[in-house]
Length: 319
Image (tube, rainbow, N blue to C red):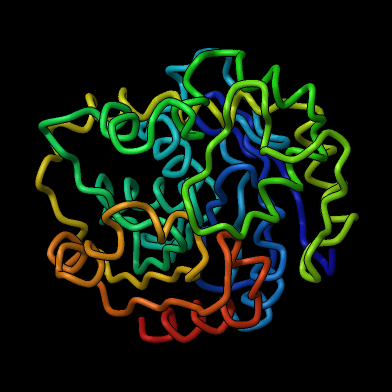
């Protein structure tokens, strides 16, 4: 793809695949689920042409990066540790880098800024706000109380269960179901009912997502399966336990947040109040902008690449 280079970097004993292009200050792009470096293909090309060096890894468990077998190898500390080692390897001359995250990548980016603010110049996070640790209650208890056991994050918990259901649906179908989601309500995956559509029902792709795009994603998830990506969700409560020392800690990095108004993450219970009633700014005091794009779903970097590219460029130009 237009001069994007690929290589493998050894980080903490993990072989990590990265895509990169350009010269200049590094922008580290962090994908979510079910995504890959490929999620950032438009941003890599655009920002590289504007004087930046775009670096987009497949996170552990995804794509061409190693997938450790243990569920507990996918905590925020493991993943942030990978990223620090990656930066040491690919940008040893840059004390701080720019970071852009989406979905789980945004969550990891918040953790990166929480643990190592000395390594981040500025942050653009997409879809997922900072989630301050609630010392009173574990995340999964909260999710089950609000949404019940059919909520997708709860359905992901039992090892092997959702993987078996996804295998029945087929990798390409699962990816199409996720990537074409535009319902701002919570995602429920009742046992044995998939995404609620009749078996074999055609899924119409939007203009921004081609069959070739699905083929690329599917080729990688066919190889790795979904377990690595789902293991991030399986460590939600473990992350909560391990991050107890950071209860009440603020994110001390300049930040910009972008969401779509049809984004299921933006429409999660309590998120809009957190953004608009001061909680977000309290926890991220250097939050400079909150952008909500109209009639846009969860997968903003692919659905609205030109707007996202401009928002990233305009913000990072300040530093």
